[in-house]
Length: 119
Image (cartoon, rainbow, N blue to C red; front, side, top):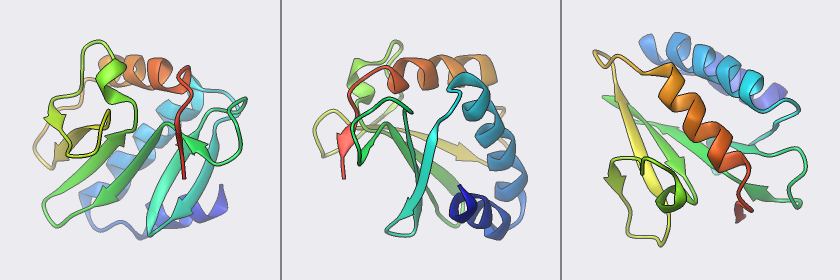
């Protein structure tokens, strides 16, 4: 968990405060959530999932945060941004976006109950 908290603290500008809030939401939605940093991105895994199976990751870009739901095509509603890689779907968060935290928590709960992606 410490590497993820360090990653969040190092996120530039508005991204750090926003993701700290969403990270806390993930912890509330999935008690015991596993966290790791791989390939310069935080990863989240269900506490009872197989080792190295993850349901979500994020990556910071200049203008937005890209949230990857690895089995996103199985979520309801499906996150809005398609991926070239199978079932993965993305949710992009820009500085001026209002994040519907209840809907985001719904995705988190659904995604954490799926087998996840082995990485």
